[in-house]
Image 1 (cartoon, rainbow, N blue to C red):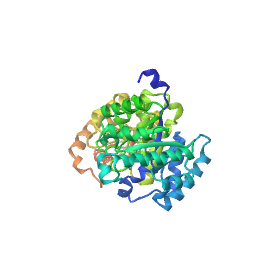
Image 2 (cartoon, rainbow, N blue to C red):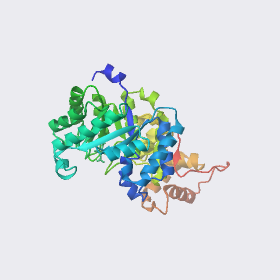
Image 3 (cartoon, helix red, strand yellow):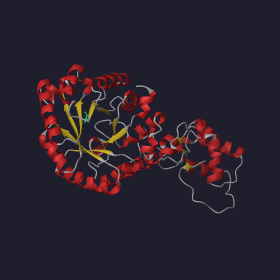
Image 4 (cartoon, protein in one colour):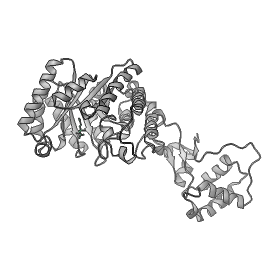
Length: 413
Ligand code: HCA
């Protein structure tokens, strides 16, 4: 795809926190199991604030509670924004799924069916020809009844489906759909595979948009998104924190953060400063920290090694290469710990603890501190050990009003 074409193309996040996100094992690990309606409303408001307009839900057939929530969430979302929103129900090619999804107020359907050899044998248990006939009948009749309805169709496990089978299925549904997906259901694909498939689909199905859904089993999901978008995909499936089955899919904020590098126009479509607050909101709901692998996180602004801390105290760009500020991370942290050098220890004792201390004394304290780091742990924080050493050496506080010290040293700008 040429640069000019790439620049004229709109890219959209399809958020699936309420569908694939709720399939995440982390909901079990954190004993949350499912989000409450109130939590979903908070998350939905956060997504809408960020500028996400495409939201995927379970089809109501998964259960009464989800059905009621989807109804309420659709009504609630409409009170939050004037923007046009797409409420997408994740549906099997099953008339019941479709009808009930439309009844609860969804205005788009994300239909799926697998025809990989494994799916034919062990999952859908339909031959390719049966699957093609089913998809074509169900999607064709849905299109006939709902000419304006947004329809997306995905062949589950697309990267383990022989291309000729994928084409056989997509040829049959192409006349009826707005978008074709390419789920990498079990994280098989590498970026080169993604480029090849996107190019093949674009060539064969030029009249529809393409969507990608990459699972992170090999840690390649985000790299695959970049390859897909570079090759012409419009819709990118993501979720808050990347929550989804197994090790998940790309996170909404990781996708926006990375795509922004080549598509700065995304800043007009999305309110990027809401990225970090959205990640923190999920942390507060799950009662755990924003994952350390998440690009838009305070972890990514936290420095622990003495060499890094010294450099960041001088010029933070040395170890802070990316502009996270525009994505809502507006502070950094230097953590006092066993790896800290005298620079940070001097800074901490002088500026935060307001001790009357010279650089020489700080160097001596550092030496003793380094010899006693085995004492640091749950019952003694590094700051406590430092104060203990400084006090034993008769170093006193500067006579000035006491400020409340924070456990971590932040905002060194
Ligand atoms: C799943 C289904 C799916 C569907 C993706 C899509 C996948 O396994 O739960 O509808 O595009 O990864 O294949 O999430």
